[in-house]
Image (cartoon, rainbow, N blue to C red):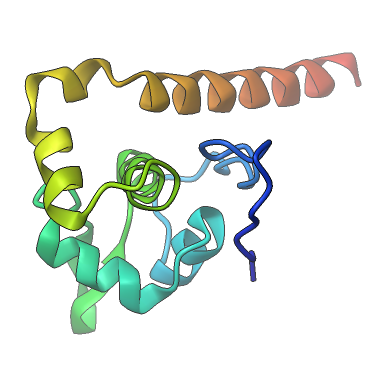
Length: 124
């Protein structure tokens, strides 16, 4: 399990693993990818309307890539930037949320990782 760090160098999701190229993720996988316990994810679903995993048989949650990115953004707002739940909700629902620099950096890091993986496959 990932442990939060107090280092000033760990900004955003730099300490989080890259998101695998899958379509759906279980709550346990999202927990590991985002460094947040499953009960916190379930609570955030109630507090943030932007976070809505697909529910299937037996109410099992399946998160998609955009959900994982949203969890990382919520985590950053709450843990790294010090927002309250209400402040983070307001930040995400505001017009500026679409151009949030943090989310842009997350997407760029993920794209770079995926491109590096493709390059390794092509070199074989």
